[in-house]
Amino acid sequence: MRILVVEDDPNLQKQLSKALGGAGYVVESAQDGEEGCYLGESSEFDAVVLDLGLPRMNGIEVLRRWRAAGRTLPVLILTARDQWSDKVAGIDAGADDYLAKPFHMAELLARLRALIRRSAGHADPLLRNGRLTLDTRSGEVALDGKPVSLTAFEQRLLAYLMHRIGRVVGRGEIIEHIYAQDFDRDSNTVEVFVGRLRKKLGADLIETVRGQGYRLRRDEGDGGRGDDGREVGNGR
Image (spheres, rainbow, N blue to C red):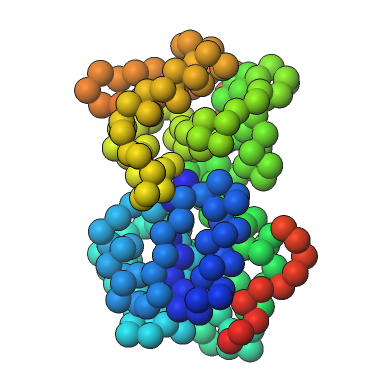
């Protein structure tokens, strides 16, 4: 999953990027509203963490431009704790959720997981596809109730496909959403990880759609459901 962080406080941006990266997300960041607006318009992200008090273009304007351009990506705004009017303005501008500074990083991660799930049509944090389950909170995968050990990249790929059960996703889309910009983005590596998942989860689970990409088959019986305690962001 690929997350955009638009935050001008360098310390908070660093903390967010570290926590999100540690949680298995691919993170891109911007330090001002203009850069953040451009990235959100020109690239695909699974969710955005957007501060409202940004230089060059405030977060409300960034959000309005995204929504006016038809960008539907989930957005979590960060606001000052005592600025209730900013929360209202952010929601009215198209934000999906908000978090007041200072906040606990665990809460931010939980809210992002919920936004990503809901945007893909899943309410339950435990994603199910027949005999296969993936817990979005812990990243644990089980097949027939038995734990399956996956590498970090295997888990990222499976999570991306589990959020899009039955939908064809292209190799380029997968590369954008599970690999960092500085990673060797060879499409052959996608094929390698797909092959590994097939060996661990079943050869027929992930279908190759010729000329298009891959699709996680909807398994019969699918119910369709598919840090520490320290506060951060107290600088402003």
